[in-house]
Length: 289
Image (cartoon, rainbow, N blue to C red; front, side, top):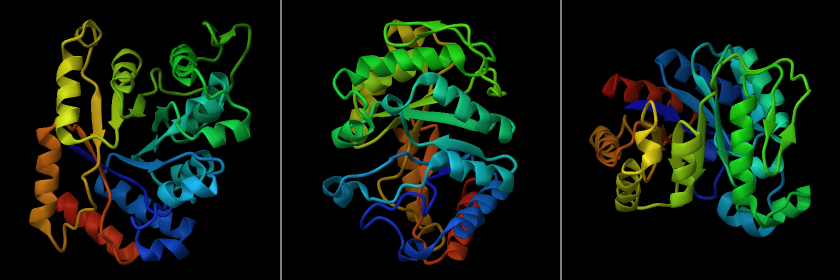
C-alpha cells in the first residue's frame, strides 16, 4: 500500500484540524511537503472551493487554498511527490480550461499531476459561479471524456453532447501522455465513472462494508474486465493516526484499509506543530517502508 497525505493547512475542517494550522501559511505547508517528498510519500493534496456559503462552512470548513497556485509553489519545492487535486469540481470549468491550466502544472512539475475530480454537491456555489447544477452528473461524464481526449495533446479535439471543439491549440500541454484521473464520490455512479473513465476512485462518507460490496460488484462488470489494470482505491483511515504516540493503532488503521481493498492510504496525522507533523511522517514511513 502506498501512502499519501491530506495536506495540512490548505483545508481546515471544523474540529478536525490541528490548532497550529490556524496561524500557518505557505512556509509550513512547504515544510511538510518537502518532508513527505524526501521520505517517499506518494502524494500531497489540495481541494477546490471558490466560495463556501456560511451554512456549509460549519460542516465543510471555509478555508480552501487554491490548488493551482498552491501546487505551483510546491512543485518548485519538491522533486518526486505527486500533486493531487482532491478534488476539482468539473462543473466549474470548461475541459480545455482544465487541460490548459493543469496541463501547465503537469509540465512545471515534470509530470507529477494527478487530476482528482468530482461532480460537486454545493448548489449555492454552482449558482454563484453561473454553473448549471441540474444534470451535472451527465455533464461531468462528458467533461471527463473531453479531458481524456485533450490532456497531453497540443491540438485537442472532442465532439460530445455538452462539449464540442476542434481547431484550437493548447500550449503548453501536459507532459504525461495519460494524466491519471481519480474520481471522488460516494455513489455507485462515481465508482462506475472511475472504472470507465479514470484510474482511481476516492470514495468518502461510506462504511467499509459498503466499499467492499461496491468494489465486488464493480469487478464483475464488463467495464472492469476490459480494463488494462485495476483502479487505485484511495481512502483515509476513519481518524487521524499517531504513529509516534500510538504505533499499534496506526498499524491497525492501515491493516483495516488494506482489508477493504485500499491501494493508496490518504493519511492525516495527530500533530502539535509543523515539526511534529514531519516527525510523524518519518515514524509512519519507518513502520511502512
